[in-house]
Structures are given as structure tokens and as C-alpha cells.
Image (cartoon, rainbow, N blue to C red; front, side, top):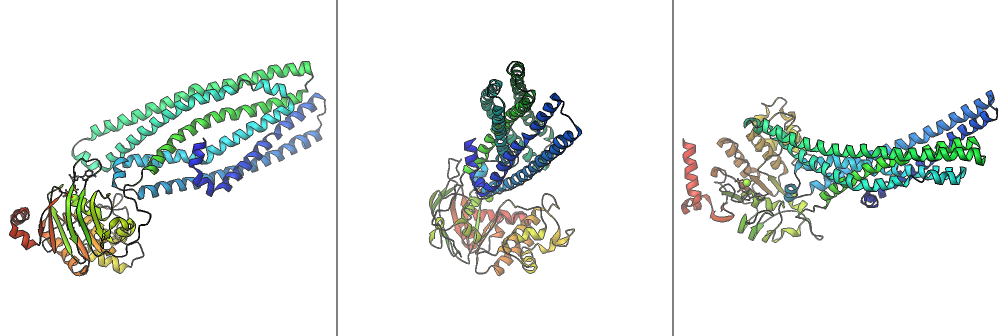
Length: 580
Ligand code: ATP
Ligand code: MG
């Protein structure tokens, strides 16, 4: 419990007044709850002594009782309101913290944690921690206060009666201690299976078209079923534990009550204990026992959230492999970029994907990168946006190590259109506007769309620029998606533009239009074009051919044609294809 509280300190410190207020209100509820028993006690006394009159009932019972009830209602409501506020606040804080953590992660993080798993943690585990960090923690505390307060109240009535009655109660703690391990182990299994299921479900949803196209529905269904089954089985085991142990708690409290009654009768008959005192005592005993049972349940859920907290911390602890050094400075323009003896290997590969790359990209230059699929083109350009750690060799920006600059500022100088296009479920307009952080005018957006040769498609969309695209909207064609992504990059208009295979789904004329825009609009800026179709890089100032991570040929189009290597043969075969 202490480690959990410690791990929540970042939030508790900021909202301590909530916790203090709820604890104070909790104490007053426990105290106020002692009052109704005194009425019952005085009523018993009056019955015994034939003192019941109309006035007595009106004043001592009704009025007093109503007042007490009103008081209890008031403090309980205050507590509930405060607790709910705290819960919502914590939920928001946890979600923001979780998201912030995920957003700064690099590619290797997402290889380790799959999307479905992250989503499961974000929903289930965050919720469990949220419950425990707000309501449960405080409830355990206020149940504890109730136990102490009623225990003291009972002691005031009769010390021996109290001590004898509570003898069996410590058993509850032993049972709980035994349960703790089981509950935690079970809950870890539940959450792990839930994560696996999350992955499978997400995969099925995102790939539903492929699944249908290959008639894999049944197979996929069975796979989903297998995980649901697994989750169901473990959850059931969890419930069984609860079902088996809950009666134990109840029996123990029942035993305590039996002892109290037996001893109580003895005390009344033999020791002259007043009946009303005993009535009051037995009410307190019930009040004393019920939090013990509740605490059993609360702790059960609390132990589960300890596991959930661990699972969230796993995400927090997974530090990005690309981290800014403490003295990293911002860069405010990028002139030259140089790879020197640069080699790169992915963490889980045992071979180098880039080998001894030496390449300088000057300001205002257009660089073409071509080569067979899997030759390392994307890996090379991803280095510039710092998606991957530096492995071997150096990468310079403006003649300084790229690591000397903070990543955020380097990225802000680069418009990168990745090979997989990302569309958000928003309007076309908003999707393009994402390219620029600060406010943009309609004018700028239209211009960017123009440059990406996307304007001709807008009229065909049902609501023009306001058409919602993406998962919940109109599905754009591959070529339209590419041009929307290019428009976004044009809007950003940074020192460096990278198009990673972004012209693969557009026809020749469109490609030519976009290349023309690049030349005119980005005259003194750097462009990097990765392509399979050589027509996209023909006009570049410099072209490199990658093969198996090595630059095997480089030069201008003319030089490469003369060299009669891979480029030349590729060019001829593409020309033939186009001619056919
Ligand atoms: P394409 O033309 O198909 O886009 P590419 O030239 O861009 O190919 P890369 O994506 O850079 O090729 O991949 C180069 C090599 O690195 C491939 O062998 C690929 O399997 C490997 N690779 C790519 N991404 C990863 C990764 N995340 N982990 C391990 N290996 C990877
Ligand atoms: Mg690629």
C-alpha cells in the first residue's frame, strides 16, 4: 500500500487539500454515525422504565433523529461530491500522463508494446489505478477510522465485552494476507490476457478488409474466441476466490456477534449491565464488523490495482532510445546534413541495414534516393527525423553532431511524409492544417493543396474541404491520401522536405505537376525524394542508389545513365513498361 501511495505522490502533492478534506469529512461521518445508537439506547431505557410519553417521542426520538440524519446526509453528500471530483481529476491526470509518455516514444517502443496492449492498459489499468488512487484508498482509510472510532466507543461501554468480542476478528487479516498473493497473481494474468485480446481485436478491426479478402473470417473469429475464453476462465477463477472467501469474512463477524450476545446476556444478568447499554453496544459491534468485511473487498480490488499500477509503470519506465542530452540546444535552420561513415542496425536484427554511408546534402539541393525494396531507403531518411538511435558513425547538421540539437527543434525544421500515410478522422482541411502548429489562413491551405496537385480532387468530395476523411469518414484513394499528406508537408514549408515513396500511387502527369511545384516553390530549400519510379528523381541534383544498405551508385541522372549500372537498367525497363 505504501509503495502505491508513493507512486501516486506526484498527484497527491498537487491535490493534497482534496485528500485532507475527504479524510476530515470521513472522520465526522464516523463520529456522526455513533449518534443514532444513543437514541435507541435512550428509547430502550424509556421502555424499561415506562417513561415513554408523546413529548419524549417527539423531542428525543423524532426531532433528534431527524437532525442527526440530516447531519449524516450532509456530510456523506459532501464526501461523495469531493470524492467524485477527485476521481475525475485523477483520471484526467493519469490519462494525460500516460499519453504524454507514449507520444515521446520512438519506434522501438512501439515494437515492444503493441497498440492493443497500450490501449488495454490505457483503458483498464488506468481505470483500476484511478479507482484505487481516489475512492478506494480513501474508503479504506475511512473504514479504518470507523473501526477505530467504534472500537473506542465500545470500550467506553464495556472493556471486557469489547475485547472478548473482537477476538476472532484478526483472522480476517490472516485470510486477507493469504489472499493477497493469489489475487495479485490472478489479476496479472487477467490483464495480460486482456492485452493479448486487445491486440487481436485491434488487429482484426484494422485489417478487416484483408481478412475478408482472404476469407480468413472463421480463423480470425476462432483466434478472438480463444483469447476471450482465456480471459473468461481467469476472471472466473478470480470470482471463485471471492465467492469462497466472502463467507469466511461473514462467518467471522457472525462468531464475534455470537460471543458478544452470549457474554452480553451474562453481563446483564450477573453483572447488572443496563440493557440500553448492551443495545447500544450491539449496534456498535455491527458497525464495527461491517467495515472489516468491506475492507476485505476493498483490499482485494486494491491489490489488483497494484498490478495495474505496475503495468502502467512499465510503460513509463520504457525510456525512449533517442533521448536529448541535458545540454541539447534548439536548431533554428538546417543548411547542410552529412552522414559520415554511418552504419545502422535495428535493435532486433543482427545485420546492418545501412553500411558505411557517406553523403552530404547541401541547402537548396534535391536528393533522389532509389534502390530495391528493403535496401534501406526509409531507414536512411528516418535518421533525419530522429526516429532511430545513432548506431555507428556520425550524422551532422550544420557541421555539428545532430545529437547536440534537441530533437523537437530538428523535427520542426523538417517536413516528413512517411511511407505509410496517416490520416486523422477529421476534415480534409484540418488534416492539411495539421502540418503547421500555429494558425494558418485558408489561403495558405488552399495554396498547399494546389502545390500537391490535390485541388482537382476537392470538388469531387461531397463537402469539399470540409469532407471528413479517415476511419470514420470518406475513404480516400491511395493517390489522394498521398497528395493530402504532401499538401500537409508543403504547408509546413520547412528547410527540408522528405517524401518517402510518396509519389508511388499517383499517375505520371500528377507526379510531374508535384515535381514542378517542388522546383518552383521550394527553390532554395532542400528536398529528399525516395522513389521506386525513376521519373520522380530524374530531375534531382544528386541521386544515390542504395543496395543492401550500401550506396552503390551516385550522381546525376545523366551520369548514372552513362555508368550503365543498376540505375540505367532500371530506367530502361521502366521506360519499356511505360511504353507498353
Ligand atoms: P521499401 O522500398 O520497400 O520501402 P526500404 O528501402 O525503405 O524499402 P527499409 O524500410 O529501410 O527499406 O528497410 C531496410 C531493412 O531494414 C529491411 O531489411 C527491413 O526488413 C529492415 N527493417 C525495417 N524496419 C525494421 C524494424 N523496425 N526492425 C527491424 N528491421 C527492420
Ligand atoms: Mg521504405
